[in-house]
Image 1 (cartoon, rainbow, N blue to C red):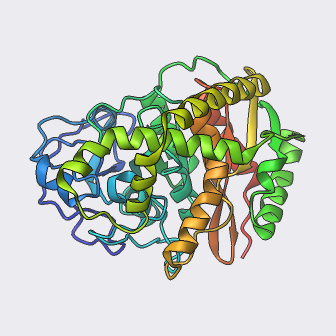
Image 2 (image 1 turned 60 degrees about the vertical axis):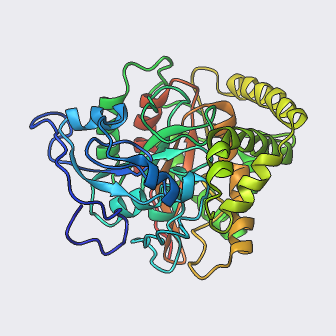
Image 3 (image 1 turned 45 degrees about the vertical axis):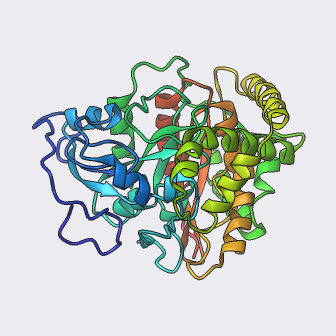
Amino acid sequence: MPIEDPFRCFVPYPDAPVKNAAFGPLAGLTLAVKDLFDVKGYPTGAGSPTVLAQSGIKTRTAPIVRTLLDAGARFVGKTHTDELAFSLNGKNAHFGAPINPSAPDRITGGSSSGSMAAVAGRLADIAIGSDTGGSVRAPASYGGLFGIRPSHGRLSLKHAWPLAQSLDTPGWFARDGETFARVAEVVFGKDRIALPEIPRMLLADDMFSQAVPDAENILRNVVQRAVPALGQPESIKVARDLDALYWTFRWVQGREAWIADGPMIERFAPPLGPGVAERFAFSKSVTDAEYAKAETTRKNFRAKLARWLGRDGVLILPTVPDIAPLVSAQEPELDDFRNRALRLLCLAGLSGFPQVTMPVAQREGAPLGLSLIGPKGSDKSLIAFAVKFERAARIRIA
């Protein structure tokens, strides 16, 4: 762990040696790892005192972390996560909250809160996070970073604490497109679907309307900034019933979160923090009928989005509805924002398609991200296009 941690992003574990290759495509870059992923020589706490108490020192390193170490990245510490990764706020009732280096009066977002803060605060060049409902994408937007939720199942989650098996993915953060793309070259093989250099762009008109008016206007202007270089996107409506997709996501995530963590919660009755306790209570209540209905809706939506994108299309949408909420916001306000954000974030989760968020704008001095969703298996070429798009569309609005 770095001696200085002004943003409170690292878990204060005793230092243990973590080997990395002396040479490789990521040599010279520093790496932080969310405390859901095992790193040999360290415990894994998952943001929970109960999990930490049972962890012990791990004897293996998660494959996604090992891949980056073998490519030359140097480990600098494990980062804080929201409790059991079941939050988008970055506030942990047991271990505190990292500070958002890009907007200190606003939350980091979660659950990859510490990983975002480490990269935005220049304490690490890249950081591993996980994304189930938006836990890389939302913090990346709040911190002015690149972030990715890869195609579901493309990267290994072995030796990582689970939340919802059919939704969980690893992901990573970087401050600049070049570094972001370097990681992609290391972790991905050949894309199953390789997007053209300039894909067919679809603007999700109904998703833009989910953003607050000022954020919507800023992001629409950002898209227009890219038109001279990339062409005019076609406007489409993605969701006939966005509320139905929201509840589909909640039911799937809830049922699977209870499968993952319910036995531990019922056996040890750990004191769960605000918001987390309520979400697990909801998770326990999801019925077989709700889960079955959700699976049908998810299957139909996945097929619909696959038809929209084909093998050459990308969807443009806001990452989240607005800049990060204020640190002073109370739990009801944060929960309301989370529910609004999930209506945007659930599309990639339900489809299993990759989504990249790009740092393209600001509002009231705080970062605001824009996203691209591509066909499943197009991750590396989607990142290449995102880097190009960000360069064409970059704009900073105070």
